[in-house]
Structures are given as C-alpha cells and as structure tokens.
Image 1 (tube, rainbow, N blue to C red):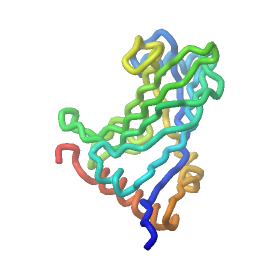
Image 2: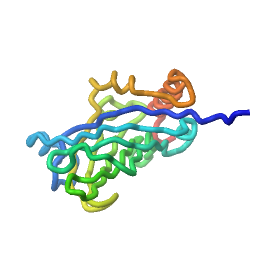
Image 3: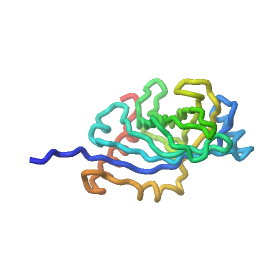
Image 4: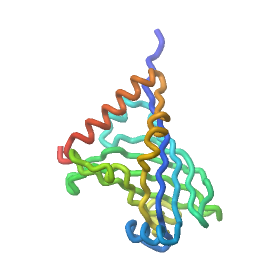
Length: 194
C-alpha cells in the first residue's frame, strides 16, 4: 500500500508600496516614501506543505520565499526564514491578522528583517484591509532597531496573475483551490472573537 501524501499548495504574490528609512510609523513612512518615490517590492512565493494541517493550525502558517527590493538598500535580494501567518484571531483588536515576516540581506551584506501586518476586521472586512500591509524593516533580526517603515499593498490588478499562480501538490489544482479558497472564505466570514 502506498503512503498518502499530504496536499500541498502554493501561490505567488507581490506586495509593494512606499517606504522610508529612519521612520518607525508605517503611515508616516508611506507618506515620505510616496513623496520621494521610494518603493519597497516583495516578490513572494507562499508555500504550504500540508494544506489540511495549515487549516487546523490556529496560526495557519505558510513558508515565504522570494526577493526583496528597495532603492539603496536591496536589489532583488533573496529572502530567508520567511513565514506568513494567515487570519490569526486577535480578539483584543477585534480583527484577524495576516503576518508577513522574513529576513533579507542588504546590498551591503547586512541583515534586515521585514515585519508586516494586515489588519482585517471580519466579517465585514473591506478590500482595502485585505490588501494593505503595515510594514517595518528592522536591522539585524526580528525586533531589532527599526530601520524604516511604510505601507505595502497587493494591487487588485495583480489578482489574475495571483489566481493563475495557485498550484496544488499531490492533488488536482481544483481540489487545492477549493480547499484553500474555502478556508479563506470561512475565515473572512468568522468574527475574530470566535
């Protein structure tokens, strides 16, 4: 009898937006970055090795790979130790959080760490909430000194490419899509307090 392999799932996502060095507040960093036309781009591949386990996990964890780019800091630098936590309930905030975290090297070889959060007020989340990532770049490691901040977004015009990038492993694409999109739909329909 052959071993049943877990259903895996992956997709590609681009998060990009204005960001500025020397700022701790994402909104302030975005305003400065917009004026100076300095935009951070994260080209990401989100990978889930076991889709059923991810759905059961309260943190709904997935692995992040890809590249990070920001003028004067990083030019398509590979990210490492990347993790995405999806729809994590925060009853105090009355929202579900999408946490993007990964390390990358600057062009100068120094280590940086991106920590970004989408704040989604379910069950009536706006599209804006679902695509907006409040972001801080830390020096050296998670929780290190803040190097800069800004607001990245998933552009709605990238939605077709995002959907086309979705793939399943050890199952049909249809089965993977049905499971993942069903999970996302359920999370968006459920209040964070439950």
